[in-house]
Image (cartoon, rainbow, N blue to C red; front, side, top):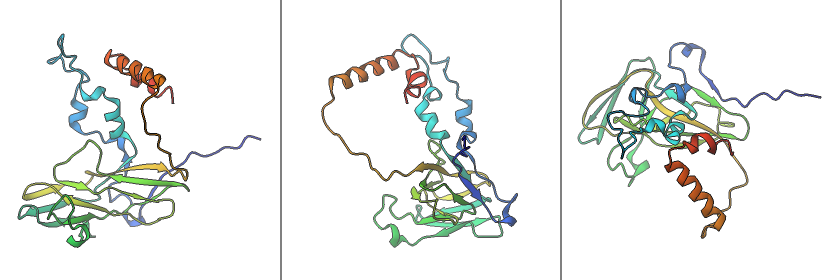
Length: 235
């Protein structure tokens, strides 16, 4: 007997009073930055016999990174005041609940950000995934904003049913910065956990591996769009 299997679903839920007030999550593919949208696939000013003028808009791996998963935007407008060479960060917001909290420096002592204090964006969305699925939370990929950088993390969202907040470091020079409501702050990439880890096989390539590598490289250099046309078809 035929039995319908519903597709795996990621759920974002908020408190009733927040519906229609805070900015909702959106698919990452709908949040491409303006500079990328304006970029032509080929720059005719550059195109020449020695340079095709192709831009990153024709780079499928770059685009895939930007469009994978979901974007959680900032719930309400936040102002960050950065001072003393980035060692002091103050925040304010246009909302009736806290939007930013601070962490203690001892929690990240010796980290690459130096004396920049760790902060945290407050998130009002609870994320729920099917059993066996977790979420990777990262800075929106290929979207550096020059003001802050999210600290990456993985959460088992199939069991942790509460809003996940997002640690960050203010990275801009001293000054006052306004981050508008709806600005992308975190990219959420769901993935299915596998209890069987991949074993590593490290060594010299086999002849057939070398032949395949060379064929793919030559097709790519020949401008055939091999990756876009064939790589996924062979999955």
